[in-house]
Length: 253
Length: 375
Image (cartoon, rainbow over all chains, first blue to last red; front, top):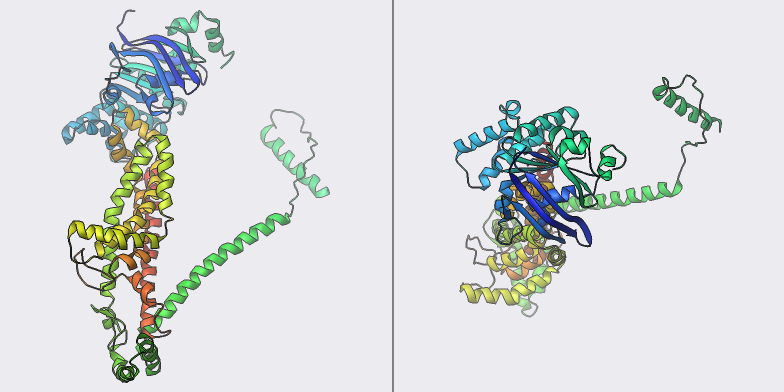
């Protein structure tokens, strides 16, 4: 299977103060595929994810070296506008985090801060985004309702719609279904499967079955290092590294 | 011990039947050694009741002050009670103190005022709504309007100047300032709220007043504007502190969500953080208004204390609180003037009470709606 490479990291190192959280990560993430990051808690997979849209900048005492290339551009180069970067690289968080605003305003937030105020265009964007996140049919009649009044699974899909509304290329998902029940989880997973046609998706998950179900590629992290990275099929059937095998078969982690 | 035993048994059988009835075929009761008898703890009992007593005392003190203020203000609503006896007492004392040199002249005036004061000096509703405040004269006038206007005017100026500064400063500290700077800024500004108001008043009286007069070139050196600025120095720390708390309480995931959508820091602060913290900011504003409204020493020193009725910000004013502060010490006990001062106190009391009540209830409702998704 040949595909373009969307994100390339080269010797990415990250320190939180004294702690060496990411060690020499070099990874090529293909376009329009789902790449899963797995590994035990504290292995650096979330940190790695957050370094792809520079959310780690918000934390004090973070030092990063190495490079992250998105479409060939180093996002840690000095002249990069982080705001523009984050428009291109959307993020879905572990805990669904809608704003305390109406459903409409939640989705319209992104376009509005980008200067779109035409009601017609906003209506269009909101409808399209909610349809893409498979929430439209459930909420189309009460878009004025608060986003916080939705159920957990709906809230998470609302957050996905909100991220889609700014038209990103890449979606980073940090354990998007870990707080959801199995039914809501399967909806999110279906959604991820549909979304990969148009977006490059990187997903962090604790749930190995989920990684196996939704992803095309899987990277296994352990103690800040990338242990193994391959097609999901291979990782789950014939892992090369002993540690990967142990983790996948549930011997530790 | 028999009681203990049966209690223990009751617990274990209950547990057995509920969860493990289908797991075990035998239902033998495990023999544990738990003592679940209720115990009386003397230390806790005493501590609890002392705390209870203290809280009731402070509550009682507030209620008593409340009653006292209203009781002292009450006579102005029943003018018939004010006999000429109290009036003559009043006049003697007041005039005797004011100028002791020309004694003959005083006696003349004394007699005059005893005759003339009678009804005109009574604090009837009409008199209280008058436009002049001249409590000490042959024909005392207790018009409260200029005082009320003075209070509102200087509070308005103080909040108009102080609130934007305080809120923006809070926004900066909670959102933009590096952590080390924030750790210095917040305590420093909060320290200002413990600043003696007499010092702020003195600073306004001596320095600010001359500076502003030189700068703006208005006629009166001490006026509502100078007082308002000085007052804002007292209101800013309170508004700042409460606003900062409200802003910092906005969950971090909300700012992250906004930033991850490609919003700038400013957009996030204005469109996500500030709206989410509105109830807190509103409460901060009301507290600031309450502080400015009730403040006495600063306005007493910096506003000129002339009870004028004007909308001009650069003319002297006299506030309700400053009036009480200036006149209470000299007034005759039980006199109409005395009662009117207490009436002013009641107005201040009621106003502050309403302000706090609104802050409390509005904020609670609003917060609940906002974060439970019913809004």
